[in-house]
Image (cartoon, rainbow, N blue to C red; front, side, top):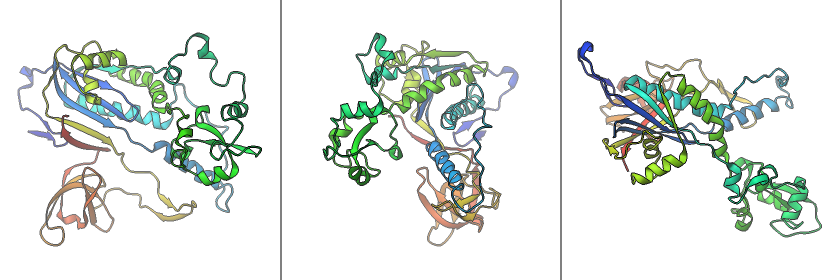
Amino acid sequence: MVHRLIPFTIRLKVNPVTQITQELRLKLDPGSKTTGMAVLHGNKAIFLAKIKHKPGIKQKLDHRRSLRRSRRNRKTRYRQPRFLNRKRNSGWLPPSLEARVNQTLSAVQKLRKLLPITAISTEHAKFDTQLMQNPNIQGVEYQQGELQGYEVREYLLEKWGRKCAYCGATNVPLEIEHIIPKARGGSDRISNLTLVCCSCNQEKNALTAAEFGYPQVQAKAKTPLKDAAMMNSTRWRLFEQLKATSLPVECGTGARTKMNRIALNLPKEHYYDACCVGQSTPDNLQICTSYVQTWVAVGRGTRQMCNPDKYGFPRGHRQNRKLYFGFQTGDKVKANILKGKYAGLWKGRVAVRASGFFDLKDDNNARICQGISYKHCRLVQRASGWQYIKQKVS
């Protein structure tokens, strides 16, 4: 019988006394934006998937913080600052990093419910960020850094020749400026800072140096290492949580994963990297599936009840409910419309409305039907915070 449609799962009706299950190994290739998953039975890969982690968590927290801070300067309800009564527990992680670990663990739990997994392999890689910046670094240089003997402004004056990096103006007040703005994902690292005059700083606004017409300046800015820092921060938390499942956990380095992938002549994909994690990788791997699944973490909505405008003032309030006419946003439904503009049979994810007229969206979040009655909809599968997309194996 069909146990679950997405991901498609069949439950066999057999006598539990004589039931024989396969010993399966789940392999993980954790990443900052995408995590690869594979399930192996001996030398056969029977399941391939990748997790796309939910983006924008830090940006939403920053936006909420800015709105709360602005209340202290507006003639609205005063919000007393609370920063002396905060205490972080041991092993605390920022919410954006904690979410990535939780999403990986959630996917592991889903697979354990559907498959008799007996062991787990995960890549446990540590990134040397200083070596990534300077391949020739060695010895005591690890303890010195770029600013040895300098302060930040003095270092920048020496680096950029005591003139504006854009227009070349000299003998004018110079301001510290981000080559890649923080609003565009830039960091406060010294390699992302330069010195410019006030007029260039205001004219550049939120553009990158390359967009402003100075690619040679942006070439001096080193690549951000946010992804590497993220993996260094979460690797031990993920390992400890996997150990808590009581299954044997095997760890492998990134170098071993690359060596195994090259030996097996596999392309660079997250799910193929997952197949090659650890010492348990077979010498002869057979891909026994034609499809790879993409699990997108879309969440279960938001707890925000008030919709503010760009100034922080409320412009609408939501109802304290998610279920309307037996449906909630994200449910997989089938709509059979007999007449009108959208006549036909449609399948997709529903966006509910209190009026009873819903919208349907496809896997790419594009609207395919708008304003259709709930009476035409039939539930296929409840929303679980995930969106499942199936595609051919590359």
